Image (cartoon, rainbow, N blue to C red; front, side, top):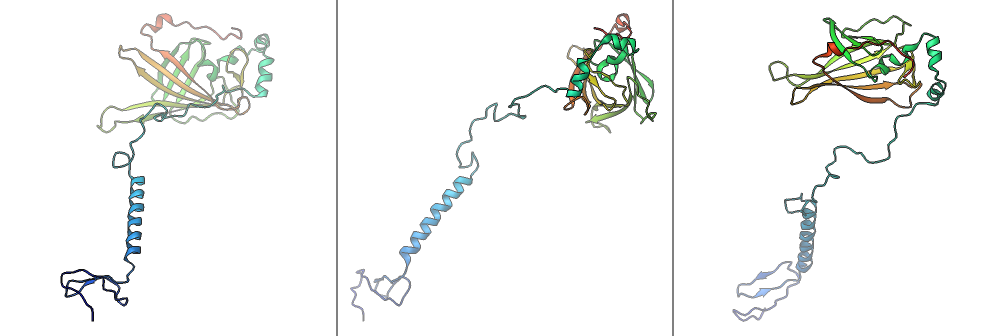
Length: 269
């Protein structure tokens, strides 16, 4: 029998019980339970859980403030590193080193620098018109050349290679259409069946296996001036170490007829 004074708290030990109780006399019975250990574990888990939540919390929601944005962290493209211009192959270097305009003239190949890949890089004016509903005609006064851009797949003659080759054209549309606002787009052309020629007048060559891809875009300035930008890619595994990409710019002339100045091919500068 326990001896407890009513209203007085005492420690009454009963090892067989596993939790604390208060008897009818108001005595606090402290059992031999593991409550200190459990309490310590509970506190430890709460601390660890709080730390994990704080570590996972996004910036602005209880987490650490985000670092301020910089041009470096906001860069949409990576421009860092060491870059080199696209180089010609050793085979191309040999051809360029042996270039002799007199030999080209004697062989009747004054137009070697006026094939499609070289023509577009020359100091030329372009006159573009529709030959029919499926073919655009492009004329140059520089070298007096004519290119045909076929929207229906042409049937090239096997083995027939020319300075301007065979060009397949396709419109690329973006936005608008079906009453949903203005429609934008550009032209993509791919030229093959090219006769070997020069990318430049200094004898840098391209081979008969060259694929010449072009992207044609028209831009209008706020003052009404219109510019034709032709981004072209020359792919030639024989004479180029990698595809050669350039962008060419032309301005629409309002009085173009008076300035048109046809000149024949010239093997020299």
